[in-house]
Image 1 (cartoon, helix red, strand yellow):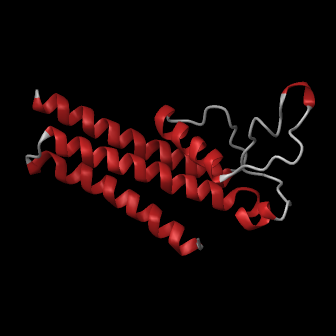
Image 2: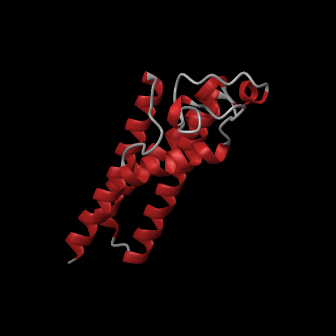
Length: 146
């Protein structure tokens, strides 16, 4: 995936959150349709940021496939295990980045993987803010409906 595709995907997620926030109060949508919209936006946020993390970490997937993995973005637990021993030859896969993105959206912060670089920190902040906005819109809509 090239840089333009990642940026387009991110812009798409941000626009969907924006439209959810701006159109929800006046559209008279059912609770079910609002919930479906929010779930779709939340899941697409997780997947979009998983792709971002997968693409930027350690020089990208092509660099990791060549065995040249040295991350300056994330410190996975397998890399820095107890007793100072690291997992020899371990390289994160897309599932590891998906797990990181899921946790960032669910807990509004990474859970087991420290974020090291500024660019990764900015991405996790943006991801957490988007997830919070979706949550606040849903809670606000429910309170207004009651």
